Length: 342
Ligand code: ISE
Image 1 (cartoon, helix red, strand yellow):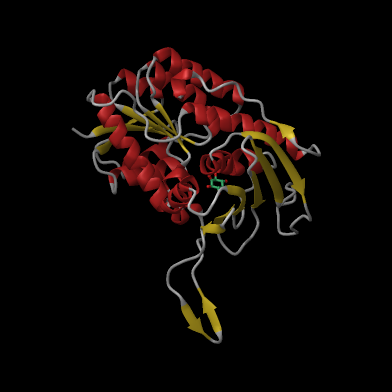
Image 2 (image 1 turned 30 degrees about the vertical axis):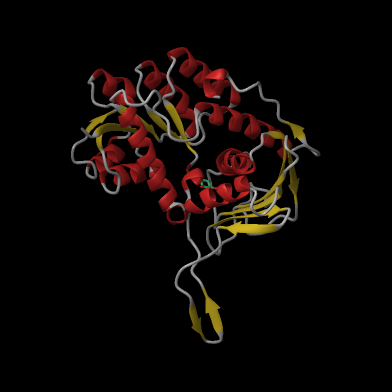
């Protein structure tokens, strides 16, 4: 039978996931929309014909309304939702970030270990983007020689007023902290941030673009241009420098037009189109894993980044935020990977 998913939070991401679960995804149905704001909840319910509405996770669980939870509330509310769902033994797909800081992420890791089952998958969806997958496979194969460096660009057309300076790290570079080490097969040991010339188009309260430099324990360096006022579109691209060549992903593609002595290729306008496939594949993989777990065919309900990944990224983000107002590299100190996650 279909996995009954309760979607927690019906803001932009939650709403997007509700439409995805009700449309493209197979084997799942949205059975609960958990959202305290009545208007938002009603709009979302209109896209989830089989769902009941609830104001809190506790009420939905008490009503037996879900087999699994997709948490898409703002990051500062993730911990409470995660701990409640873990307590109830539900498979969880939690949007990034896992929680707002390393301490709270560690509490989630401890709660999951205490329950004895892997139930938490974190929504670092880039790992499900076909090009990222191919690049990782290429690097791991060694066909182009060993990996030396990664240059990444993360460009947003603009950001809302609510986007503050630490969000450059916590909301945006958070993705590179996950996917960079995943590509490079190493662990981050330090983070440095450099401020260059400020973009005059950036909102008054921001100072960016920034250049973020990660050092990995295998010697690989990863630099990230984080730039949120580029205006022209949404661009996330990566170049991997290997001993015998280079590889690139995230280049514009699609309809090519020659007109008026100009050649054009479309660029993305926002992350929803850039990462459509990644989101679809991520949610489908999670639904399949959660179903197999609930029928007893699989021992864990996770098909992607784990709570441990969420924790280690939270530690990188904390170092990154410190590095925003400090010169030089800020060390990243991680405990050994718990046996549970090896
Ligand atoms: C946003 O929260 C995302 O997750 C997007 O992928 C990222 O590009 C953007 O910078 C974030 O604000």
